[in-house]
Amino acid sequence: MELQYKPDFPQVLERFEAWWRCEIVDRPPVSISVKRTKPPAELPGKAHASLRDRWLDVEHALDRFEAGLQGRVFFAESLPSFMPNVGPEVCATVFGCELEFGENTSWSIPNCKSVREVLGIEPSLDNPYWDAVRRGTQLSAERGAGKWLTAITDLHTNGDLLASLRDPQELCLDCADDLEGVRLACDHVTRAYPLMYEDLYDRTAGQPSLTWIPCPHAGKMYVTNCDFICMISPQMLEDSIWPSILREMHYLDRNIFHLDGPGALMHLDRLLAADELHGLQWVYGAGNEPISRWIDVYKRAQAAGKCLQLTCENMDEAWKLTEVLQPEGCWFCVGGDYTRAEAEAFVADIAKWAAGARR
Image (cartoon, rainbow, N blue to C red; front, side):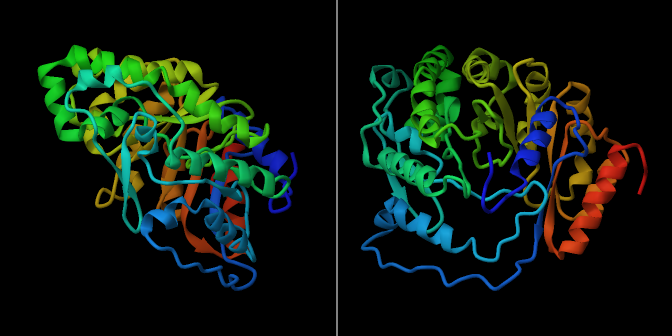
């Protein structure tokens, strides 16, 4: 598959396919920002009557994305992609929730007075929020054919979906008062996972799958996650939400788990023990930098055979990781904005490291 804005995409995909297997073709993947070759174009503007109208106008969002491609440099494993998005809780609308919109995000209005009330709601994709994502996915796949990739939108499922339907605080009380009900409700909403995923996946016209974590795969790939797990103990996780997370992992050809914040680290061993898990994205959060503080997390994940997204603040932090990690299964996402020469030198050094040399 060739892309106008990323002519070397076949090689990029080959590197990522090896990364998923904790192998290397020629070097580990590297995502790094290279300064534009020309100033950005003026993005098209449009007046909307409300924030809701602006968020649901996925056609306008796509127009702005395409205009913004001017002068962009997609170096190494950086990819041109568009992800239709109406916020992280769009899956709750499939179970009857409405959304409220802010400038930069949206959130669901909980619609269930008890966790067992969830069992009586059948999923339906027939709502304006899901339709906007579906429409944006279809339009991007058509307009971007041979130019860019279309990413599947942000899907918060399993326990996070329950938290959207109930409210996180109420779901915490449910875990204390009716853990069996939480497990049953979680099983119920997870049955809709293939329905939601395939409705969007099928509209990407057979391209490699991609989402908000830009690690493509030729088959069905997605991020498995549950931010809510930082609120419950490992035993509560095991007895309620974990079976649904595992079912999602089973369904996908490749998955990378988004582990969010130090409070979630108590579940790391359970995650790493799952043969169905392929990769780990560890998000240590603002105020917990730098990445080198968390080397033990990455070493444990490598020892368990998982590939890693390494979100480094800068090149120096990336080099600290090369002193303690094996190159197989490492994907370096380097913060900062560099000249092409700086980025080329970094990628060349990473290739030497992978071949057994040292900087």
